[in-house]
Length: 155
Image (tube, rainbow, N blue to C red; front, side, top):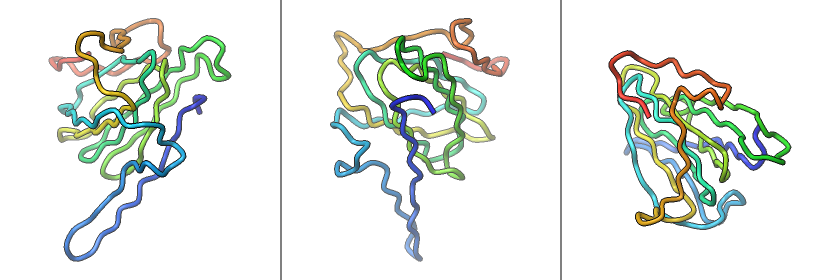
């Protein structure tokens, strides 16, 4: 696994009223600080890639649908430099992924329904100076090839 990345199995607690799933707690070892919480969606077959951050750490989970998350360690000097990790997460595989800064990542909605993805980054989005690194989904720099769905928007 990529150095600094943490994978946490999420526990669903259910009863006759419904269910509850804790995603991230401030008293966990993987938590560093709070920035914001946001929800994004992806329609079936859509790829959202590649993203990275110079300083920001992401905590990503999928609460509805399923996604394939791919990480690439592009950090020079990292013990896992050049490594690619792939994970499937969502309703049927409740996981939280902590993604370190300078690790490029992206995801694809897999399955027949819209995927709902929650991210809890450790710092708020700065609209005037965004901490964003971007590469196109079909870049040759990252040794992973997304299977792009014709007619879908990607990026």
